[in-house]
Length: 360
Picture 1: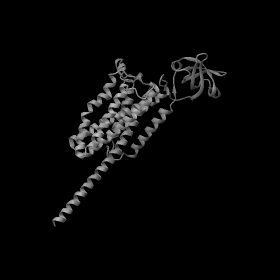
Picture 2: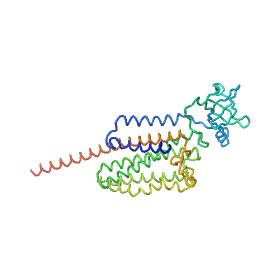
Picture 3: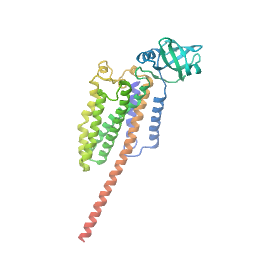
Picture 4: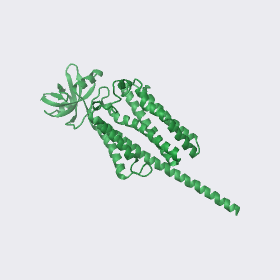
């Protein structure tokens, strides 16, 4: 099911990215509305669905941090004065003391509720406020990540789009070298520019993640090192283009650059991070355990079903946004190319007329 959701969403976004109209014709209204709706849905769901865990996970969070607060989802078994007895989805039953807003709002017997709690070693679980009542869905509480896990639905897809953009640029570079059309070079350059942009977004969101989970924005983790190298390769591509003046020469050499750097980019994107010990999922220690990362792993249990849906939506919406930006960028590049050609033709016509007038 996980492969069908995430893989299907990814393939569908790529198909819709090139259809209808390819990269050089305006996308229809329904296509743009679908992109906007999917992005809005991702933000609303990824940021709006409450996080909740079990009593066991909450206790693990409390052990890692003093006076830590954590959301627990459970069903109210019985109600007492200032306290409730609750049973979580794992079947664990605990007596929870209600204080603050939780005591004011209260809870009803049989109610499925998410409470923000802390663990008092003297008195057990203490609930401070009601997060949600009868929630339809909840995100799993991950010790060490907790609410920061929401960054996954932005960091992982942007990193994936940075890789997708390189392959799109490589695809059009191959086409240019075969057919020598400047339009294909414009498509390759636009895709590479967007790849650099998404690479920066992935680096930024990853740095924020690292600061709150590892204590520093940058520590040269293998994943951080690999994406930095890919970003340098992107930068070198545009430095090369800016150093060449002739259109044909610029297009030819930059296309060759994309082709020659395909193997190093693939190595640093997919191979190098899995050859080294890392705090990132899918690193060497995970590969040895038979897990290539929770998103790519074929095992269903490696991702919560709600996270599977959100990742699928994340890949789809970010890819659609990329192709929309690619479409707009390519059309702008092609319009500039046509304008430049007309200007050159106009200047040549004026020179020809001047030469004919001089000869006459």
